[in-house]
Image (cartoon, rainbow, N blue to C red):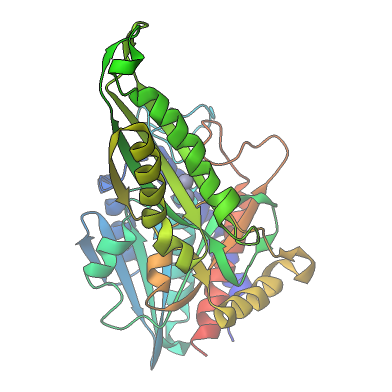
Length: 387
Ligand SMILES: [Zn+2]
Ligand SMILES: [Zn+2]
């Protein structure tokens, strides 16, 4: 095995520079044009063949090893958030109202660093490493269209890995968790249709606002009264709009929300459960309803064997005392789609430090010293999986 730690050190500054360059030019979902051009130019300089324009702005670099074998995919997401940056950094966003506040700049830089390092040892590699840069992780999701465009084939991906900067895990620490790690996430929109009229004459109306309040509380009973309390699940209503004046009974109410779970059976049951509650409450109150349920990302489930490889490799990078099992999160991640096709592990790169706010905050930042830990872990895992 070549001295991966030393090679990673040689590229550490290049990785930091790439992160800063990408941080300056954050772009929104499916509009990552400058970002895509930067990644393409980097991989071309390395002499790694690149396919561009996948699912719009996505791209894939393919490193073919000196010997034949399986294929490992290293995935990075490319999109930024609609947040006005307030870090005051010298390399802060030059795109007004947009910011890499979720660390996707770091994810890309680490994947590029891993490409440089693995390229140096390509003659010893048995198999291939695919570097997948996907758009739109923050929504609506770029993984699925990338898969539909064939990124899991030619050559077929056997293993998929990736990591996210993780504000719940201390800096210098790496988190690995086998099994369900992130939740399935869906969106729903409800329209309650009543009969509007004068505020003084409720008997002549069907009050959509009042029906809406009963719907909100009845939906909360799905989890608290109908589900096994040992299975985590969430129903959250994020918006509720009804009415325009103090003396008018509203004709309509609109609500929207999200459901979350790790459990495939619960995930499959949400839409029917919502219908049951809506049908019953609305029938009792004389209202009608419409429900639009949009199934989102599946649960992100880490494969046991690959997770064990990541844990062992992370121990070599940061020491066994700095590898932890992070808590599961009800947040979602479209890495999950790749795991439906290939065994994989999505791990957590600790960035927690006093005074650094978490992701999606206009002051989000992290110590760039952690980047080399991610690069080295990516490389070691890829080489180990390829034997
Ligand atoms: Zn995010
Ligand atoms: Zn993210």
